[in-house]
Amino acid sequence: MTIRIGVIGAGGMGREHIKNLAAIDGVEVMVVADIDATAALDAAGLCDAAASTDAADVAADSRLDGVVIASPDDTHADLTIVAVERGRFVLCEKPLASVVADAERVVAAEATAGRPLVQVAFMRQYDPAHLQVRSAMNDLGLVRHVRAVHRNTNHQWERPLDLVLSQSLIHDVHTARWLTGTEFSSITTQVVSGPRPVEHVVLLGVMADGSTVTIEFVEAAYGYDVELEVTCERGMVTAPQPAQPVVRSEGAAHQHVGDDWFGRFSEAYRLEAEDWIAGIRAGEVRGPTSVDGLTAQRVVDAAIRSAVSGEREQV
Ligand code: ISE
Image (tube, rainbow, N blue to C red; front, side, top):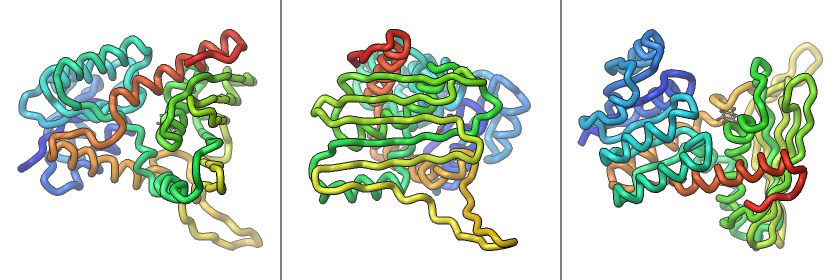
């Protein structure tokens, strides 16, 4: 049976999903929507799809089995709800919503639909390096500490703290929940501003089982770089960096780091797309759920409160 997909949002992430979905046997990307007609046409051309400028129309399209939502963050919740109310499967880019109340509306709509339909694109769960960490943890006993470092090269952006948290660190929040299997109970935020409103953020989370999490974000000039380290009762595991050749020339040795997430997580995006489609075929959601999206948003909300109050905040 052919699985018919609509993609909303023809920016970088929308195009990444189109490329990966169109490469899967038995998948047809039927329509691509973007408010910018030229961008919609261009992205639709990647997979011979129709182009549309009406996102809500695509979310409601009864010919589709699934809808990918990769439009601006503040449109995610409403478009997801339109699709869910019509029984469509959704792969929604993170964040599920820009505020907790909207994420709660999505979870409520899915409950009313009576079956799981929404996957949130926390794609690190599919990253081979993250999966290796998780599997190595099996022999090391209980988790005591998770340390995540997230370095971005968004030099052109001047993001305020709420966007750094809801667009970037929300990934690390989800990773910590996924790896520890428990929830954040409190969080403390420290922010350092410089030329940009946010140069460096450190989050210290205490989990419900007493383990701790530190998440650091830095605007880095040299490249996009993500690190993960988990300390358990009987050992410690770090995520391997993607394999890259070491090139020696002109008296120096070089190893490519890359400057965006499309390179670093290309395999994760590909595996995420395959698993989402396999889930649609089986009539289930296999990856991170709407409740994961909502829970991560609540942690982000508490982190924002902590930055304002200067205190440790309950999640
Ligand atoms: C971006 O939106 C992403 O989703 C990337 O995965 C993340 O690492 C980056 O910080 C975000 O800006």
